[in-house]
Amino acid sequence: DAGITQSPRHKVTETGTPVTLRCHQTENHRYMYWYRQDPGHGLRLIHYSYGVKDTDKGEVSDGYSVSRSKTEDFLLTLESATSSQTSVYFCASAREPETQYFGPGTRLLVL
Amino acid sequence: GENVEQHPSTLSVQEGDSAVIKCTYSDSASNYFPWYKQELGKGPQLIIDIRSNVGEKKDQRIAVTLNKTAKHFSLHITETQPEDSAVYFCAASPVGAGSYQLTFGKGTKLSVIP
Image 1 (cartoon, each protein chain N blue to C red):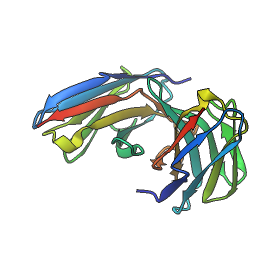
Image 2: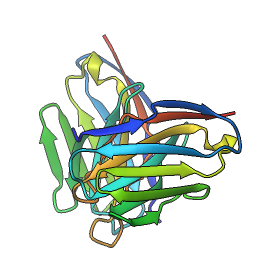
Image 3: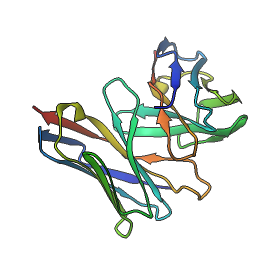
């Protein structure tokens, strides 16, 4: 398995506050992804990166931004958290774009 | 965009029996089809994948079949064991068409009864 860690693993925050989730990989993978997982919806892509400083939007990008300043780190920011962003967030990385390996997830609760 | 349907949503089998999970996809440009296993509280784990130039792929007790004409692919688990109990996700992607996105099915919760 790819060496992917996510931090924090759990977070509780209040509506309107900014939140940043971190994904760190030690595999020197070029591609990185952020997904959210919700009951009844499976995994949905939020944003992805195909290189340092190269990012693009996924299916459910509204309300989220990302940054990738180093190969190993991919940050997901909720500028102003809302209750609809309560979810489990997974990061993935890949050497080739399709073969993705997932991290352990971050459980976010927005009150 | 791509749409992936997965059935059944839940599946219970006796230990030692086989389990089959089916997925259909809509985009004929899709050519990469992975399967992930997710245990409770963990991230999805890639267990097997198949590309469109192959009709079947096996890895010990797990096999995946692909029918591009009908746009469906299936996961077969033989001689099921309690540790196979998990949620399984299929996905599809049009690799090489400028897309980096996997589209996932909604998952199948497999329970293997000892």
